[in-house]
Length: 187
Image (cartoon, rainbow, N blue to C red; front, side, top):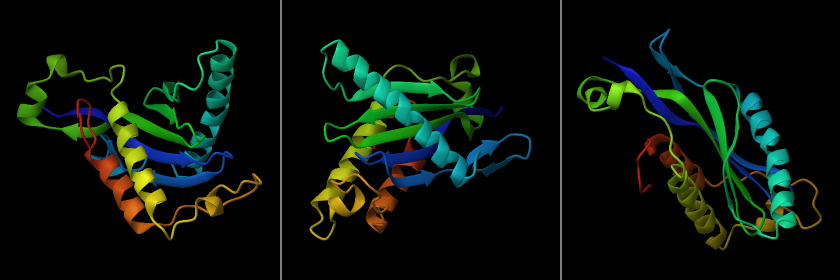
């Protein structure tokens, strides 16, 4: 018996000026073709990440009105469709981390599937904190690189900016996206 469990479809980092800094896309399981392929094109994922900016802004306003300040962890931002959902986290410097989860993105077989209650796997509150912690750690490592200039990527003037091209950072994002499964406590 094979069932599908949640997996990461896309990891995105958005700069403090709402400019895209990095996007990593991961293949998802397609039961009809019994293969793995991305659910959306890079342009579609880019648009999905951009659609989360309104939610970040709305929640920041709500926090300001309620005098709760920046909470950082926004959790579920919105369900995109019956299969995809986006989760978000904002740092105190305004950099936003977005994770798009495919609720049926990874196939598991045999004994592993037998251990699951009724073959149903979902996400609990706080499941994504491990992913956001790992993404933030990778981003902080990037900032500690003396050759990395953050102002090139999110200029103080607020216009434009370069994408992150660090191979080590891209490898860290790939590792995070490929190794996460529900219930993982460290990445």
